[in-house]
Length: 278
Image (cartoon, rainbow, N blue to C red; front, side, top):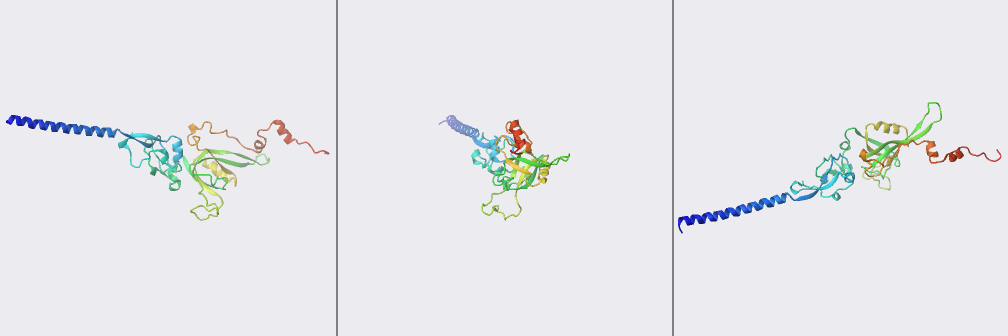
């Protein structure tokens, strides 16, 4: 073999090796590129979610949805569907739009602080009432209630006192509710027996409502009652409450007794016939 032929042979071998390396490298790059474009389903926030939001509310309102993200963008321990999230849990802190959701972002209400669940003009107020008035045993953190107040009016003209009742505030979120009792002694599970009457609830209310609540509590026993609202789009967003709120009415003796009656029925109830012989 001449010198030139040997050099040509070596060059051909090197060229073949180089071509193989280029093909292998290109294939690896294409494989990685294809892998980087693969997507995976993750649970993400579609809008900002305030701290203290029940998981069930966030899911029902579409604040949490399953979306596809590039696999390499998937964060550790992310949830992949809404079924993996206990609806009774609440957000431990604010969750921001676009953020992927992990189980550690939601905790039982007993493990979250009240202060982390109020902001801006909202305040937390603790109210102690009788078990029926406060819906003890029914009420749970994350529920929404309306508050009904009853008052005695003392006319300035010296007329007889009379009572009135009305809803004083609507759509109040429950931050903490009475714990479940053991059913035998009425003692709260995990706590010593408390001799004080009634149970207490912590509510999240606008600061403008706080004086209405304290004024009503000052009116005496039975002056304030809770009524439970449905867990639906009627709660939270004021722009979605069309059809959820009835008219604000004032209940009086006359309205309670005579509402729905005809004039003749009212007249017959007021002007009763005299007994025979009189």
